[in-house]
Length: 129
Image (cartoon, rainbow, N blue to C red):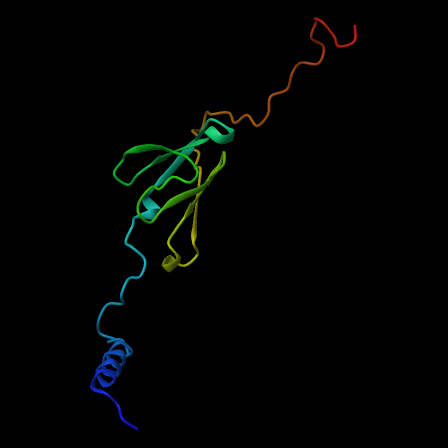
Protein backbone atom coordinates (compact mmCIF):
# COMPACT_ATOMS: atom_id res chain seq x y z
CA UNK A 1 0.00 0.00 0.00
CA UNK A 2 1.43 3.37 -1.08
CA UNK A 3 0.95 6.48 1.01
CA UNK A 4 1.52 9.77 -0.74
CA UNK A 5 3.43 12.65 0.83
CA UNK A 6 0.33 14.85 0.93
CA UNK A 7 -1.66 12.23 2.82
CA UNK A 8 1.21 11.79 5.28
CA UNK A 9 1.42 15.56 5.84
CA UNK A 10 -2.36 15.71 6.38
CA UNK A 11 -2.19 12.93 8.97
CA UNK A 12 0.62 14.72 10.80
CA UNK A 13 -1.39 17.96 10.92
CA UNK A 14 -4.48 16.15 12.20
CA UNK A 15 -2.45 14.35 14.84
CA UNK A 16 -1.03 17.67 16.05
CA UNK A 17 -4.57 19.09 16.38
CA UNK A 18 -5.74 16.05 18.32
CA UNK A 19 -2.90 16.29 20.85
CA UNK A 20 -4.03 16.56 24.47
CA UNK A 21 -4.27 19.99 26.03
CA UNK A 22 -1.33 21.31 28.06
CA UNK A 23 -2.57 21.24 31.69
CA UNK A 24 -0.34 24.19 32.59
CA UNK A 25 -1.96 26.51 30.05
CA UNK A 26 -5.26 28.32 30.64
CA UNK A 27 -8.19 26.58 28.92
CA UNK A 28 -9.31 28.01 25.60
CA UNK A 29 -12.41 30.15 26.07
CA UNK A 30 -15.07 29.04 23.59
CA UNK A 31 -17.62 31.53 24.82
CA UNK A 32 -16.81 35.22 24.18
CA UNK A 33 -15.91 37.20 27.27
CA UNK A 34 -18.93 39.38 27.90
CA UNK A 35 -20.00 40.83 31.23
CA UNK A 36 -23.50 39.41 31.07
CA UNK A 37 -24.08 39.64 34.80
CA UNK A 38 -23.53 43.41 34.69
CA UNK A 39 -26.42 44.09 32.30
CA UNK A 40 -29.63 45.25 34.03
CA UNK A 41 -33.26 44.86 32.98
CA UNK A 42 -35.32 47.86 34.13
CA UNK A 43 -38.73 47.08 32.66
CA UNK A 44 -40.76 47.22 29.47
CA UNK A 45 -42.90 49.70 27.59
CA UNK A 46 -45.48 49.30 24.87
CA UNK A 47 -47.36 46.16 24.07
CA UNK A 48 -48.06 43.63 21.35
CA UNK A 49 -45.75 44.03 18.36
CA UNK A 50 -44.43 47.37 19.68
CA UNK A 51 -43.11 45.99 22.98
CA UNK A 52 -39.71 47.32 24.08
CA UNK A 53 -37.42 46.35 26.94
CA UNK A 54 -35.45 48.98 28.81
CA UNK A 55 -32.00 47.67 29.72
CA UNK A 56 -28.74 49.14 30.99
CA UNK A 57 -25.35 48.11 29.60
CA UNK A 58 -22.27 47.54 31.82
CA UNK A 59 -21.04 50.99 30.69
CA UNK A 60 -24.21 52.64 32.04
CA UNK A 61 -25.83 53.25 28.64
CA UNK A 62 -29.63 52.78 28.50
CA UNK A 63 -31.17 50.93 25.56
CA UNK A 64 -34.72 50.30 24.32
CA UNK A 65 -34.71 46.96 22.52
CA UNK A 66 -37.32 44.80 20.80
CA UNK A 67 -37.56 41.00 20.48
CA UNK A 68 -35.23 39.81 17.71
CA UNK A 69 -32.84 42.74 18.11
CA UNK A 70 -29.09 42.10 18.63
CA UNK A 71 -27.50 43.62 21.75
CA UNK A 72 -23.96 42.53 20.81
CA UNK A 73 -22.50 40.18 18.24
CA UNK A 74 -23.23 37.34 20.68
CA UNK A 75 -26.47 38.39 22.42
CA UNK A 76 -29.95 38.60 20.85
CA UNK A 77 -33.25 39.47 22.55
CA UNK A 78 -35.68 36.54 22.32
CA UNK A 79 -38.70 37.57 24.39
CA UNK A 80 -39.73 40.51 26.54
CA UNK A 81 -42.20 40.20 29.42
CA UNK A 82 -43.27 42.51 32.24
CA UNK A 83 -40.84 41.02 34.76
CA UNK A 84 -38.30 39.18 32.58
CA UNK A 85 -36.32 39.37 29.35
CA UNK A 86 -34.88 36.26 27.66
CA UNK A 87 -31.59 36.66 25.79
CA UNK A 88 -30.23 34.08 23.31
CA UNK A 89 -26.53 33.28 23.67
CA UNK A 90 -24.13 31.51 21.28
CA UNK A 91 -24.28 27.69 21.27
CA UNK A 92 -20.70 27.51 22.59
CA UNK A 93 -21.83 29.17 25.83
CA UNK A 94 -23.81 26.24 27.18
CA UNK A 95 -27.45 26.85 28.07
CA UNK A 96 -28.29 29.01 25.07
CA UNK A 97 -30.44 31.47 27.05
CA UNK A 98 -30.05 34.08 29.73
CA UNK A 99 -33.01 35.13 31.87
CA UNK A 100 -32.74 38.65 33.24
CA UNK A 101 -35.41 39.40 35.83
CA UNK A 102 -36.70 42.77 36.93
CA UNK A 103 -35.32 43.67 40.34
CA UNK A 104 -37.55 46.06 42.22
CA UNK A 105 -36.06 48.44 44.74
CA UNK A 106 -38.50 49.22 47.53
CA UNK A 107 -37.93 51.49 50.47
CA UNK A 108 -39.25 50.90 53.99
CA UNK A 109 -42.14 53.35 53.63
CA UNK A 110 -43.25 52.22 50.15
CA UNK A 111 -46.60 50.51 49.86
CA UNK A 112 -46.81 47.77 47.26
CA UNK A 113 -50.18 47.67 45.53
CA UNK A 114 -50.89 44.42 43.75
CA UNK A 115 -54.41 45.17 42.49
CA UNK A 116 -56.84 48.03 42.43
CA UNK A 117 -60.46 47.52 43.48
CA UNK A 118 -63.35 49.74 42.39
CA UNK A 119 -65.76 50.89 45.11
CA UNK A 120 -68.92 48.77 45.40
CA UNK A 121 -71.63 51.25 46.41
CA UNK A 122 -70.63 54.11 44.17
CA UNK A 123 -73.52 56.35 43.17
CA UNK A 124 -74.00 56.73 39.47
CA UNK A 125 -75.33 54.85 36.50
CA UNK A 126 -75.76 51.11 36.87
CA UNK A 127 -75.80 48.61 34.04
CA UNK A 128 -79.28 47.61 32.95
CA UNK A 129 -81.06 50.58 34.56
